[in-house]
Each structure stands twice: as structure tokens, then as C-alpha cells.
Image (cartoon, rainbow, N blue to C red; front, side, top):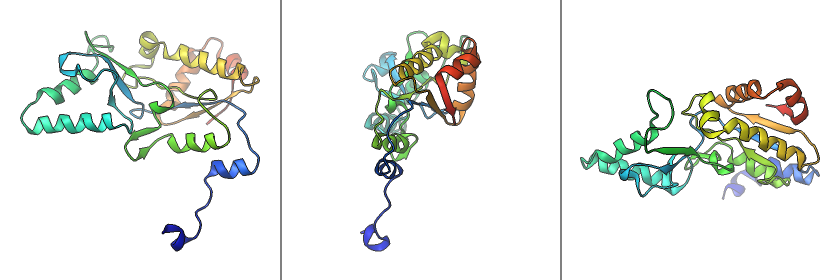
Length: 215
């Protein structure tokens, strides 16, 4: 119906570039911003024993929507344990800034970590889909997801996130003909990547060797 009213819809950018002969070359790294990265449960208390590896935050999955619906249904029924359980698992230890005892919530990995924030609310999904049109895939795109609740230093202390970003960039460049990585940043991801660049040993030399455009 929309085509009848407005005419044929224009090709998406990825398809247009594909028709022009553009193909994947430089590996691409995405660094998401605050709250847009998904978090999932790896260990929790009894109230969350059915949520192993289910998302507690972010994503378009039915699990994320279901968790909130169930929590608020229980809340309105007068059973306060479920919303409090969710808050307990999403909170960090007040003294250490790390996991509370008996709880492990970790960032989702892979491109699905921040493709959608919620159902119908995309973050990186459209860009990923357009890059796929010209030949990009998981081995040439990397989502540098991190636990945005933690201090930048603690993402390395607990999850070795900075080390993983470094090794993944080096691997992608090495396996893609030495073509430098293009880093695409969003929101707090800008500040986080700047922290990463300061953390990397001899940052200027490393940056010149492994990364090209940062945007």
C-alpha cells in the first residue's frame, strides 16, 4: 500500500552500495553507549533460579519483555519479591563496586548485545543489516559490549573487557589482510574507548597499527 501512495521505496544504503560494487574491507568495531548493552544472569539467588542466561536488561527478546511483565504483575498483586529480586540482581556491591555475593550479571556478547535496546527500538541493528548487504559478517564486525554499571577500571578487573577489545581488534585486522579497523562509537562508548586507548600500552603506536577511522 505504501508503494501505491508514495511510489517505490528507495533501496537501503547497503543494497545501494552493493549495486555500486562496494564490498567489505575494513573490519568494524561497535562500542555501545550507556544502558544500551544487554545484561544477562549467570548466577543468582533463589528468586531468580529460572533466569539463568536470560536477559535482565536490554534486547528485543521476548525474555526481556516477559521479565518486566511478570515482575509488574506480581508487584500489583502485592507480591513484592519479584521486582525487588530484579533490583537486587541489577545492583552492585556498595563497597567494592563489583558483584554482590552470590550474584553474577554479565554483558551479553556478540552483535545481539546491542542491536536492539527494546522491542521496536533499534540501536545498531539497521547499521549491521546494511553492512551485511556488502559482505560483512560476525568475523568482520565486533560488538565491544561491556557492563555499563561498572567503573571503566572494573570492566577490566572483573571481565578483562579492555584486553578482549584489544585482542579482538588485532585478530580481525590480522585475518582481514591487515586492513585497519574502523571503530564506531555511540554515547558513553566514546568516553569508554578513550579510556581503552589510554589503557593500551604505547597507545599512539598501537592505534596507528591497528585502527584507522574512529567515528
